Image (cartoon, rainbow, N blue to C red; front, side):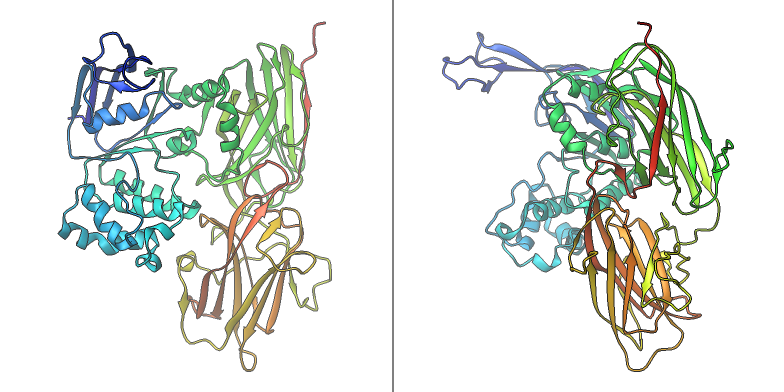
Length: 571
């Protein structure tokens, strides 16, 4: 049995004319105003949704997304057609509906939970879990009017995530909180999928729905647009490009992107005015290869055919780790190398990375020819080209970073920055919580400093970053090691180093720190030699932000250069 079936569903409202006793633009019932204009919010909608599937519905404002959810929730009935919904339905059409500002967070949990259908006993049973998920336990006694908008959204989603349901309907609720909390929301949705629950999610955010949905429908003017499953995203971008919303869309997606939608990998998308016909990768000796040594010079070359002349295109290449982590994605537009047009014919573009400073592991290249705004791809090969970086990477670090410990070791010449040695004392099992046991040393203070020695939390890509750590202990502890690890705010382990703990003040110096725009954090640990567990661990002991002057996507800037040969004009 299907969870949801819509058969030839249409929904019509009556739009009252101005001057007929109602404000212009107000809706009335179908039978009240015979002279009013008919407005069809939905037309001929046909869907069959299996149990346990997450379905995304995307579209611009006014496309009919909310009307569709209202029909599925039983809030309104279709004008034409049949809807079959099999299972208990819960709808999150507005997070935090019924919240009262003068009540405390705890009181609002009981109020809001009651509104969405929970009984008193159920709320009592789930209360602690709701609070733990929201991460707001320190604010439960405070009036809701003291909460930020982000805190209110956290509380609303946390309540909603603990409802019992077979089918969940959500409308634009997944932009909740910061990156780490959004990750928790996505993890919760994955948990719902494993429980065979069905979800219908509407959104403007194509990245979100592509990441978490099994299937995506595109609504435009109340109708389902059917360009083919592989072209839904491209068609949506085209619709935005054709309308004034495109500027807003560019602003929304101009930020750094940290994850890939792995379900799109090995697909070829785009309008095909330009076709990428061959992609090869070469090692530092100029030999074609897809297995490379750490920090080797690597070149990717893409050959293309221009079927129709295009104006102001640009080339792009992106690198993703096999788990979807976005490593780096520059393009010729971001790098200020404009291309006026592509004439019909054949050509190529290439990018060479001076040192592919990613840790050993499995990766993928994407290659694309984009339009002038990067809203539309002429051809986009998504994660199609696999490659390997040889070596061991036990702890899952993402990138090699040059560094220097201060005081400088006797055997280390000043100005020589070795690549990171393996942080053998770090086990990812401990990265998400503090841990303490008897330890002869304590972490007294941690400061992040810029190149001028000024402390702060905001730094620029490409400038020096120094981490100053001070420790308290009597005498020098023997056989103890310090570990310092840098993580993205979504817990991806970027880089870690370790050193024997000898000095009360130690400085870790990262020259020309290459991490891109985003939020990061530092964790510290102390291990005793030969013991698997830390004696002292401080999770997120310091947080900081990076800002890159360019627009490159991903996590780490990789030095590179572009070359290309374009087709000649017949003129």
